[in-house]
Image (cartoon, rainbow, N blue to C red):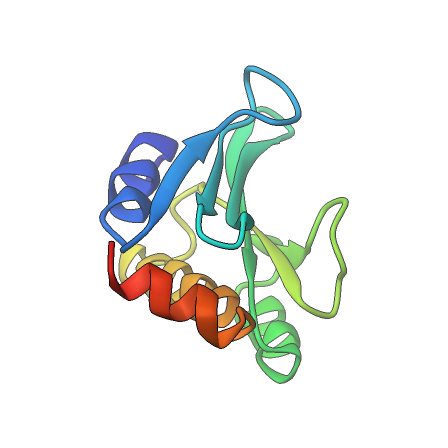
Length: 121
């Protein structure tokens, strides 16, 4: 798994866009209706990484299961975000599930009007 593949997967979700709000080298996937990010791509010690939203009760489980490759979200709320190192330790299928869950958690927090607008796009 790498940044390019994650970007391609993320842009396939309804109502998403790619932006660079922090730095030209830090792509962020947004749900543009509601202007909410669901994946922040970066580097951790020269290894590509991604911050993904996760349910708090699952965050610690993923960190324990993939110790050293799934970490508390760097510069994020550590209860709700994990940083996943794209070093091959976490299986691609698991990363795809985590990306999907991150998107769905963000959409679930949107207002009803925003969710309606999202489904109309």
